[in-house]
Image 1 (spheres, rainbow, N blue to C red):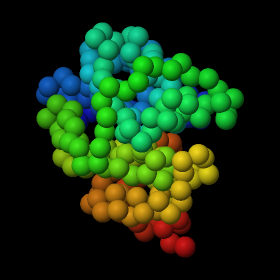
Image 2: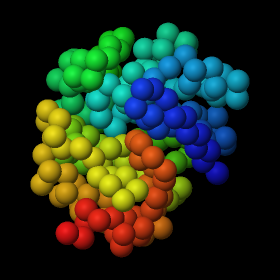
Image 3: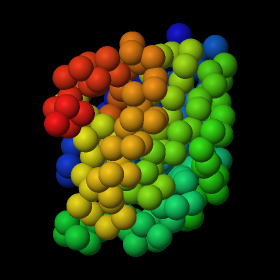
Length: 211
């Protein structure tokens, strides 16, 4: 069974995730928000080796811990990002707008695209391009585990912001309809902030989808 560990990190309480396949001893970090050394230390304590870092998007509060992981893990893991978010990455993820600074890691070395299939051990992971919050936002859907890591596309009873540079409300709503609501109802949605929810819960109760 896929192990999912959530860590709430950083100045805006971002959900960072470690996913681990015990059968193959494969570990991936998703959106290492902050304190990358802390994430790496947790993995090491459990004898997990982080081989890749997957980013839903390039806002500073989702990649602020990348540098710490790269410094604390040998060999350093691959870092995956959709190329449409490279300008945001190069601009420190907008940190300056909020009065923060993040250590700029090297550029990502694995570029994501819609429909791409990644793996964490025995589990296939479908990359779905879901822009609107940022131009290059993606979600990671794992059918075997019935879970989707959806970043800041949708939250429990909420949706991602579209008032930041690169955001667009209609594009975001289209992404929710096409990339989230097309998933099976029982799919767990693990968002970038707040508690987990399900596709069914949001389909029926999210006020943004019923106005």
